[in-house]
Amino acid sequence: MFWNDEFETMPRAALQALQLKRLQQTLQRVYATVPFYRDSFQRAGVNLEQIRSLDDLRRLPFTLKSDMRDNYPYGMFAAPLDQIVRIHASSGTTGKPTVVGYTKHDIENWTEMMARSFTAAGAHSGDIIHNAYGYGLFTGGLGAHYGAERIGASVIPMSGGNTKKQIMIMQDFGSTVLTCTPSYCLFLAEAAAEEGIDIRDLKLRIGIHGAEPWSEQMRNEIEEKLGIKAIDIYGLSEILGPGVGIECIEAQSGLHIWEDHFIPEIINPDTGELLPMGEKGELVITTITKEGIPMIRYRTRDITRLIPEPCICGRTHIRLERMSGRSDDMLIIRGVNVFPSQIESLLMQIEGVEPHYQLVVDREENLDTLEVRVEVNEHIFSDEIKVLQNLSKHIQSQIKEMLGVTCVVRLVEPKSITRSEGKAQRVIDNRKLT
Image (cartoon, rainbow, N blue to C red; front, top):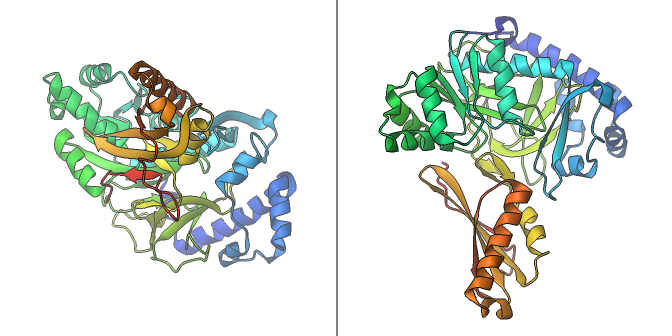
């Protein structure tokens, strides 16, 4: 089942010709309107007249998340603010958010891609879609919401949290499609069981899950516990939000990336070298229809590979293999991007704390947990228990306020965290994601 079969099943030659035309138009526009790109192209010695084929894309320099930070808040925008109808943001490495803007046309395209994505996942106009992605600056909730409305489905804008009410609403309203992170999906099943409700008795038939890494084993557990088809969806705020790519319900094997809007590449994360088709490396995406904030060769830091083989569903757009990790130190915890450097900068401002810490990430009852282990100096460590408790609570509240992530802070004695002659091991990730 297709939402837009003209584009979703477009022959590869026609699709690539469309990509090239849109790429050339995008490059001309960012060169004229975004000083960052004009300077970047000039430093790299790029003449846009040289971009005559998709292979020439490799001539262009990469765009990094740090470039967005350096041009905060609107320096990467290619459209004036009076044409920007929506602003979203995600967490950045310094506490400042990464800002993205959308024109009216961008919102229309985003809605179209989410409509394609929902249709590929098996949703249709008769569905009642329970949307438990967060609403607000996070792109997840609103991105899913507009796509669900576009296909004519009924949308329940639940957002996250308030788990008991989520279960009641799904039960009473007859929800048939659930959108949320995979870990929260399993948490809902367990919370329902505690209420004496078998979630398999609800009308749910499809789950559309993303915003955090998850494994094939986790998919199997979700499908078993909820009695649904669990579909993987991919997106990131810098590129669009949810709907960049999605699995089809027919195959559930690789995420179709909408190539009439994006050009994917796979590079060696260490050298930046373009890798042959099918090899695993870091995903790089160029947007070719965005007006508000186009991205040229954006390094996503997600590790995957391109699957060129045709899919049984009939879509001609290339597929991405499930993300298997990242090439940087970013953690994704309950859908929130967390960099160790963010927590480090916060800790260094707190008196009595030593510059040695570790982040321990785990998954308990199918929800991600974060423990922050922090060394304190001799004076603080030998102080009263109440002083230590207050310091721990203070650090915890500061992290919650800055990142929106709840964590446990454990203060440890001086020199108890292992030292390293090389790169310090700041992160211990005990989640099983493979």
